[in-house]
Amino acid sequence: MTGTRPHDSPSKTSNRLVLALWAFGIMGTFFLLREAWPTPLNERDFVAVWVAGKLAAAGHVAQVYDTETLRAIGPAIGGSTVVKLAYPYPPHFLFVAVPLSLLPESVAFVIWQAVSGALFYIAARPYCPPGFPRILVLLTPAALINVLFGQVGLFFGSLWLFAFGGSAVAAAILTFKPHLGLLVAVEAARKRRLLITSAIAIAILGLSAVVFGVDAWRAWFLGAATHQLDNLAVSPEGIWQFQMVTPYLAYGLVGWLLFAGASVALLFRRFDVFTAATGAFLIAPYGFHYDMSVVCLGFGLLLFQRWRDMPAWQTFICAIAFLLPLVVALGTWIASPILLAGLYVQVRNPIERQKGGLISPERSELAATV
Image (tube, rainbow, N blue to C red; front, side, top):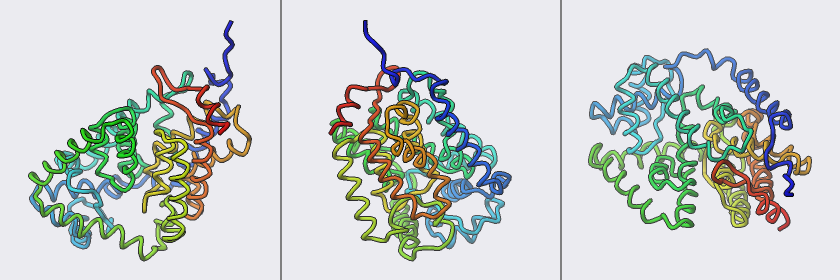
C-alpha cells in the first residue's frame, strides 16, 4: 500500500493560511492603492499604448518614440491630463497597439485586460496543483496592480508561461520586453528550440520593419530605449522609487552586478519557469511591480504546495516575496534582497510542471539536500 505525502494533494482546508495570505494581498492592493482605483481609464498607463497606436495608424511612428512630442500631443489625443506619457516598447508591439487604438479608449482598456487575463489564466493552468483555486492566478498583487494601471504584465506573464511550456512563438513575441525576457532565450537553448525561436523572432521583427518602417526601429533605439536608460542613470526620486523591483536604481552598477551574479549562480543550480522569473528581476536593469505576475504566482504556488515542509523562515520569505508588489512601497531598496532570498528558497524547494498539474516530490527532496 502506497502512502500519500501531505504535499501531494493539498486541500483548501490545509491551506487556509496560504489562502488568507492571498486574501491579505487582495485587500492590501485595494487599500494601498485606494486613491488610484477610481482614476478614470484615460488617466492610466494604458493611455500611452492607445495613443501610440493612434499615431502609428496615422503614419506618425517617429512621434511615438519622441518622448517630448508624445507628452505634448498625447494628452489631447487620449483626452487625458497625464503629462508623463512614455511608450517604451519596440515597434513590433505596435501590432498590438494599433488594433486596440481602433476601439474607443475605455473599450480597448477592458478588452486588453480581459484578453491578457484570459491568456494568463490558460497559461497558468498546467502549473496549478490539485485543490488550488485557479481563479487566484488572476488575484495576486502583481496581477491586480497590472489591471489597475492597464499595464502589460499579465500579457508578458502569459507569454513567459507559454514559452517555458514549449511555445517558440511565445518566446519570440517576448522580445517586446527584451530586458526581462532574456532568460527565455536560455530556456529555448536548453530545449533546443533556439533556432526556430530566433527564426520566428526575426520574422516578426522584419515584418514590423516592413509595416512601420526601418526608421521606427531607429527611433526606438534613439528615443524610447535611451529614455528609459537615461531615467535610470539620473536615479529619479519619484514614483519609480516605489514601483521598481530591480537592483540598479537602489544599489547602482556595482550592487546590480552583485545581485545579478548571485542570481546567475543560483540559476545554475536550478533553472525553471519560476526560478528564471525571479532571477530575471535580479538581472534586468529595470522592472516594475506590475510585471511580476509570474513571480508572485510562483511564490504563491510554492507556499500552497510546500509550506508545511519548509522551515518557518523560508515560508516567511516566500510570503514577503509574494507580497513584494505591495512591500516595495517602502522603497525600491527592499526588493532585491527579498527576491534573492526568495530565489534561494525556490532553488531549495522546486516545483514542477507536469501533466495534470505540478508536483515532483522526489526531485524536490533531492534538490533540497544539495
